[in-house]
Length: 331
Image (cartoon, rainbow, N blue to C red; front, side):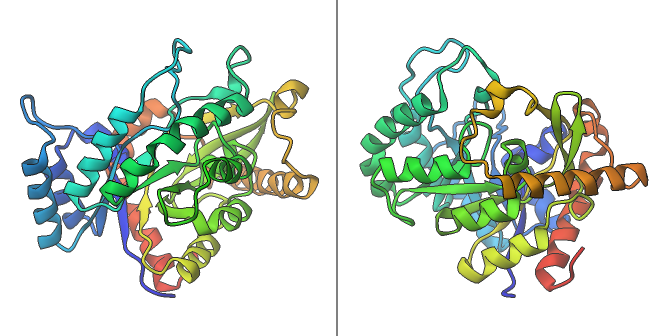
């Protein structure tokens, strides 16, 4: 396997309240080879302008670190009010910032649990609105030379993302792509390895994150896990990525918390028409493995409020574990 770079997402270190330069320094001191900036914490009065971001890029280059940028948007709605939202100006700005920082991508995350909202728009409506907006934005991303990397989050499955790209008339490597979050795929009822294979031509950035899938009173409960301690086959995913994308970076993201997936509700489950019986069986097998690990005291849900107390040593171990995978040792 080609040696892929392993970095860290700034969201993982949010409790440390570090500035962008301090996060890069943390990466150097803790064995990370780059940073994906999901959260940008700058001192009051500091602008994320060309000078600041080019200085950040120079510091990263000096220390042989990669930088990947965030701040993109793809849902043209205010999720709190449901009203239309103009995301084109903010995306132009994010793309410009990414180019100044030396990033070829700008990550986009909706931040919402749309499928859990019974009163919100349908997935088909979200897809239609998103495609309409993103088609108009193609020239802006192409002019900036960056790809909008839509995170596998909680609104679109891998099947729907592929339909979205088709609706946009996009081709891999053009202006739209995927930030592969390996654990979030569980929450949208997808086997992470199968979903990785489905999305493979489109993957341009990653959030490498382990997790578990347990049975709960309403169906499943997904949760994060320390890299190598959960049930996601990160080794196989990394191998698949390396074979097709030998320059891709493996960005560790970790945090606490869990997510209820009410598959016992027929109306909720009906929102996943692409979920096949074989894939559901694979998810059930992951749930069996998760229960065995939990019963053996090897795996547990980490409450989100406890993340601040454990984040730094755990992220350090995450990085070490993923670097071992890259070196060829399965966890």
